[in-house]
Image (cartoon, rainbow, N blue to C red; front, top):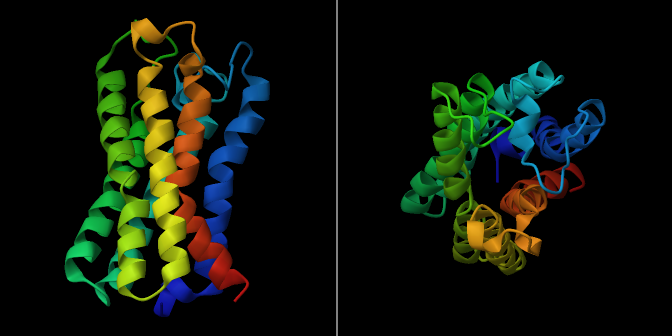
Length: 212
C-alpha cells in the first residue's frame, strides 16, 4: 500500500470510526429508555422517537462521508493488483457509505416497523443495498490479497466474509414470522455481528498500518 491509505493519520481515523460504529450505540442506548440492543437494530437510535436521534444521525452522515472518501483510497490500492477488483471494491464501500451512512442519517426509520413513511422507505432501501454491498468487501479484499501474494490477509478476509454472510443471514431470518420466538429474533445482535465482520478488512488495514 502507499500514499494516504498507508498514512498513520488516515488509519487512526479509520480505526476510531470503526470502533465508534459499535461504541457509540452502546453509549447512546443508556439514554433511550426501552431500547434493547439485542432485539433492536442500530438505526432505531436515529428514529423520530429516539431522544438521541440527532447525535446518531449526525454520526451516520459522518460515517458515510468518511467511508465514501475511503472508497477512493481502497480503489487506488486494489487497482495496483486488479482494475476489475478495484472497481468492485469501490462500489462495495461507496454503496454502503451512501446508502447505510448518508441516506440513513438523513432519512430516519421509525421505532415500529408497522409505521411506514417516505423517510423510512428511503432509509430501508439505502440500508439494505448498503449492507448487501459491503458484505462482499471482505471477499474482494481476500481475492485481491491472494493475487498480491498476501496469503495471511487473504485467509483472514475470506473467513470474515463467511462469518459476515452467516450472521447477515441470521439477521434476515429474524424478520420472518416463522422465526419469531427463536434465537433469530435477536436482530440487533446479528446486525452488529454481521457488520463487525464486514468491517474486518478495515480493521486489518488500520491496525496493521498504525503499528507497522
